[in-house]
Image (cartoon, rainbow, N blue to C red; front, top):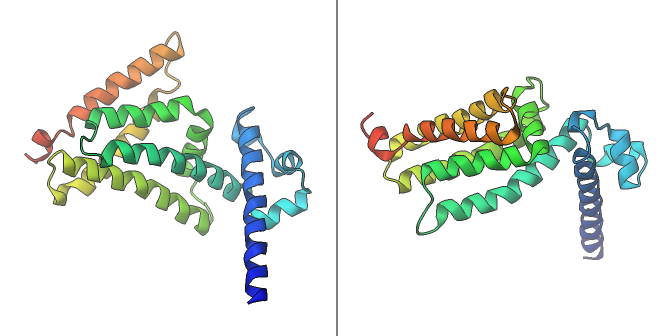
Length: 206
């Protein structure tokens, strides 16, 4: 009994220290691009030795992913409220909200594209990233069904829509327009056109 309580306390302390490391990383990511932040810098910010940080995160990638996972998990709560209430948002509104979150949070966008494009992620990292993307696939699938899309089509269209939004953002984020507002306005226009392709009237005819 005593050993069990002691082990539980040790695990809680470990998770608390791990959280401090994640928060320290996010503090540094807010100051400069995440890929320029080294594990030694994060350790210094957290007040631990460089060797100690590897007890909590075996690799830089795993630390980056945990920080990304934490941010998106928090955002997913808001997206759930948009989808799962009695009056769910429109497909267009969901797409705009998704894009705006990534436009406003540069660090999240950078980490997302890094994880999407890197082809040799460690299995634990890849598994967690897949679980994270599944959250948004599930949410949009639920939204499509609420808007009248047949269940047999909903999953495939959910994959297509989320991938389309991500691709639009990656394509036009650094578009050569005069300012950031103009870039966002252009992205939103493209999102609105894309959203029209996913209305229940069009999808159910396929």
